[in-house]
Image 1: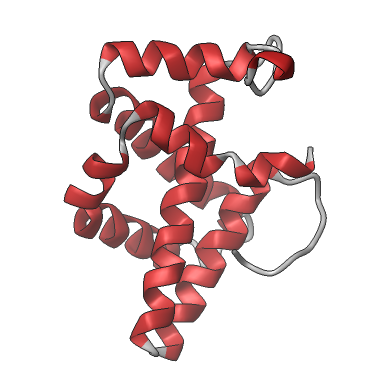
Image 2: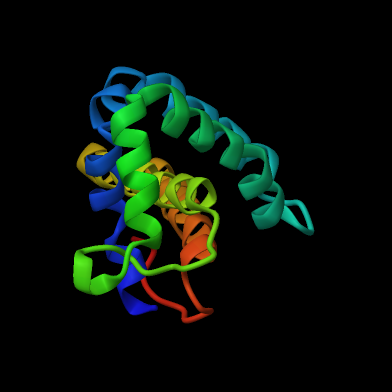
Length: 145
């Protein structure tokens, strides 16, 4: 599914949660950075990081969206490609939308870290981006974001 990595912005747009993420950006980013620091040396650190933060993304999806946009975004996940959907028939739309939102947030954090010029901050966000790729990739190793 090479397109999956490109669907995060579309998912956030359909959900209408971009403003919510922007408004709460500091709190969201601080939580992810703190969680990353806890799970950097864990044997199962990547999985623990995902497990700890995926519920936060689910909350963003559920709280930051309107009922109408939430329903339309859920429908988009299962709708056939010919009708403009993802055609992930049988997939849990909330899980997919949460994963895509996680990827979006990680990419935004990474982009901001690059503008800071702080090597340590960039490394943290590169690691976070690589972790979120686990949710949407098929194992191929690529650049962080």
